[in-house]
Length: 107
Picture 1 (tube, rainbow, N blue to C red):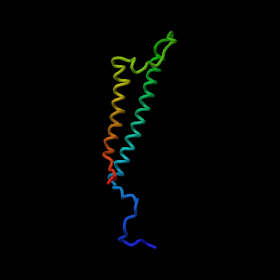
Picture 2 (cartoon, one colour):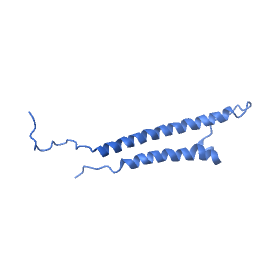
Picture 3 (cartoon, rainbow, N blue to C red):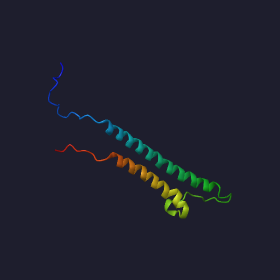
Picture 4 (cartoon, rainbow, N blue to C red):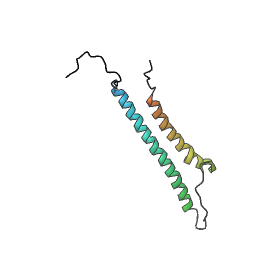
């Protein structure tokens, strides 16, 4: 049996989603994934750069550890902590802004 054309809407049925909303959701998902990739690259790069500094510090250096971010100063702090943090924050912030306001169905 088919439903009549002018039947009452089914209770609990989802409203159709616009193409704009689907596109924004996909863009938000892509930005979130990009943010997590950038966060992982930041952590990996920080450890890798610190390990390279230990590797090239000299043959007599036996106690080389990865410095904590709050132990850094000057341009090391800027290039290894602040700049990547600003980039990751900007990507996640843009993903949050693209999401827009959620419409509630509370009537």
